[in-house]
Image: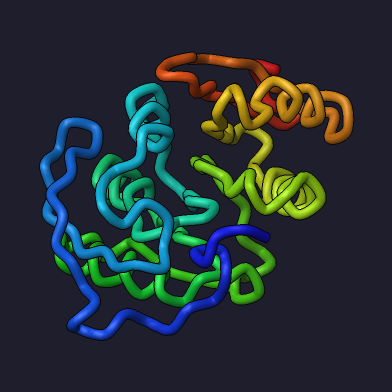
Length: 204
């Protein structure tokens, strides 16, 4: 793995917290971030592209795979307040920041979990993710294989991946190795948004 934000970190101390203003799907929010998580200074371009192109989330169990300080989680929870939004990360600091930000904005449906703590019986109506491609193909593929398999039969996943970091080869791998329909639904600023559906999806 590369980058300290992929490793488990202790929650940030009050002195380490910083306040950032972001706009998520048209909603201006004030959030707290800290070093040791992905893109603590601002909303990164890939996540912005994802949030600009995903459809409205359904009601149900929703997953933000690799939540960081929580922008995707917050956007999901605002758009679908009756849903449970599972914010997942291996980094304890990221989970703490996401929980703080959700609580600050009254998003009571958010649940922050490590992968091992996710209840095994939960399946997802939607997965949104800016996945950590820099962890390497083996780790990335293992992560996606496990969690994409937990989509509901009518569920959809939307992933954002930079073109120069292998978005097109990842789409082919999903189609060929996971046998799941995967198509590019948007391309902007060097990023691809991929939509993945189970083979059993009504529109697949």
